[in-house]
Length: 378
Ligand SMILES: Cc1ncc(COP(=O)(O)O)c(C=O)c1O
Image (cartoon, rainbow, N blue to C red; front, side, top):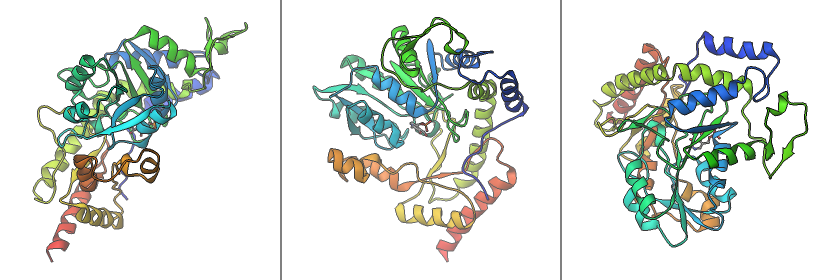
């Protein structure tokens, strides 16, 4: 069986977590304070000024959106993304407005954003698909000209860069996910990065019950002050220890992913029916996902079934959010609204990729795809 994803680990992850377990300071911020250490390392890596770690990418999305007064307003976002991106708008009582994407980066198309802006638009929230940076410079220019907030859902693209700028470093706030299939994983986890000190302080409060502590709550015997509403969206010290270990080897992880992708692409490009991932000079692809395109939905679905029978895990990322029953009923979104998104969503198939993918696994994948096309010819 070939898995779709697998974390890259070494002795450091086990040693670091055992150290926290043995210290008996497992909660956030206590003892050796891994959470703060992870946040400091993460903000350096992402070229940001501030970082707040949380317990999921979804919590990060909700926190980031809650900072920008979007209630009753419209937020422009892609539909070819994970459903949490759009759900975070609803949870913050804003209306998600889906714009179309580009055929090349799979990210929001600046022209489509311009078409969707109304007097009620408050924010634009691009998503960097599967390890590719979206056209953030063009999008930032639009949000600046139109006085809109820019929130980047960089959940899938930690480490990718565009013109030397790390993904997530250019928006008002950006979010990342560390769930199991991400380039850096802590099992579950997430982070918000921002260059605004004020947003950073506010997010920290909401992350932990609106509680203001001069000294960490768990190492502090005095009364706490609860200054506003909040949640428990904290990352634990054990999780942060994993994050620190993973971050130290992130460049290596990305390099291994890139090498595997290069190997697979070289072999798959001989099939005229397959379009391999875009790695043109304008796209720095870090391959959180390895997504190919097929001629149409029929072939895509047949290949998916064939690979499943061969015990190779493949998956469609994503079925467009605007075509889910819930969004159609709630917001009146319909088929035909987003031609590029809808076409792409019928053609994409994500194949296995992870740093330690063996030569045998890569060959088995390529051989199986070859068998599939041979079976079509006969
Ligand atoms: C684009 C995108 N946004 C948000 C999320 C949510 O992150 P999490 O699963 O950590 O809550 C994901 C997660 O998989 C994602 O792919």
